[in-house]
Image 1: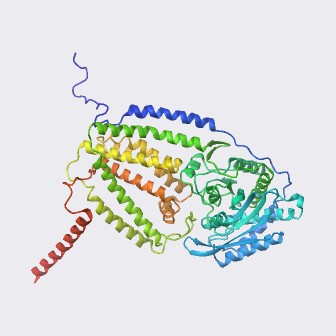
Image 2: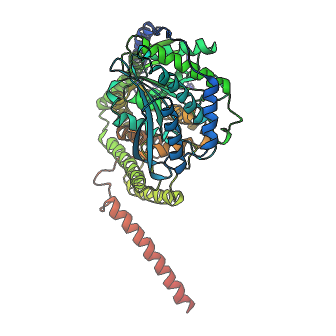
Image 3: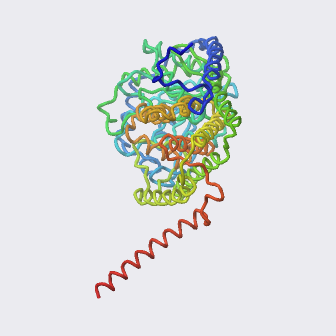
Length: 624
């Protein structure tokens, strides 16, 4: 019986052919398994417990805190870390604490201030001794960036800290009112330039091993409602009981729940741990900590941080809430004294291990489909070794680029500073950034000229070789994903879009250019999510890429994460080359020139130089 299909209608390529090599059934069947961890994650959603309110009557005086805030901002308006004014501000805090009956302690230390260099800093703290060996810390940084009096960020936090200390200083005169916990009132230096004082306290303080919780007061005199900042320097979250207790005390004081970072923002903070507030180092070291602030993810801009913009009622709300939080922590049952991972969904939390399970399950469809694609290539006797060597050359180029960038960072081309997140308002670039970029561009171009000798097409590339190139890149992406699982599974959100989008590049290899470009663009959603987070949440805008590069130059990003990122770039480069028709497998010994890539490059440069000299000699001869 004759077929009813018109003879002119093209037939669809069969499954497993070179035009449709990816097994869609395996992919779709495995994707259904993601529903199981999603169901498990749903059952982990719960509301954390909160500690009861404190029994002692409130003693926080809003007017006294406001007066201390104004006095600091007026008498010491420019108190940049390590400056003379910063030392005078520290003396001012010391005198205030001593007047409350405290024996004040100092911790002087040297630190690398971004854009300035090594400077002498000092932390100042007073201790209200408790009946137990556990320690609570209430802290606020007193330094600024010398751009404005910084009445809000952070004279307001310092004023509230002093008023809280005054209450406990008076109570310490009556033994019956001594706190259960030892309470440290810590005024840090270097908080505006990366939390240097907080890191110092964690590393050297004799209380570091007994810390149960930390409450940081930062920019509490702004217009916006109070907010809780939870992010750490590592993929961790503060204890949920601490956060729930703080939220309850703020709501009791203000009548509204405090603001928090969105669920997506919290997930990004676990995937790429980062915060501009001083709770970050404590959370990263496993100490439950949070910041109470009226600011957003980025602290207030110094240019608008004046005394006229100070909102006194906010200082009263934040100070009263902080007093209640400390009271609840002091009188309540002991916190675990450690951190976990979770994400707040309104008043409820979803556990971090459940989120990891979902992300890892979302990886499985890609892995199985990529392995199946590898098996199909093996059955068809398509050699993968040349494609893997081609990827190796691309990886070598990106490693060379990373090494050049690191060497320039070591010699201070990109600026100096401790491996901490610098304030976006700082001029943290080195003295000769344009020269540095010129050197970087020249050395990277030299590396590419060497690498391209093994990557340029020398003949017509067959469909089997193109498929091998894509398969090798997809397998490399699978290894990258597994390395991410071993280091920080939350960071899978940055690579999952590329895995699931680029898996289908072999299917659209012969489609129109805009189809291939669209699939490639979908895979870039993950990195754009990270840069977009810096641009939008931290109000960096177009400066987000340069700020991210500066974090790399300072060494804030762990070296394994940098290497994993370079491996991802190498795989992306190979897939782009195939899609653009510029891919070539690594040449065989017969296809390679007799000289290696470096010798060949030197030979070409010399020949071009000598040919130019010869032309000039001929011109001179003709002119004579």
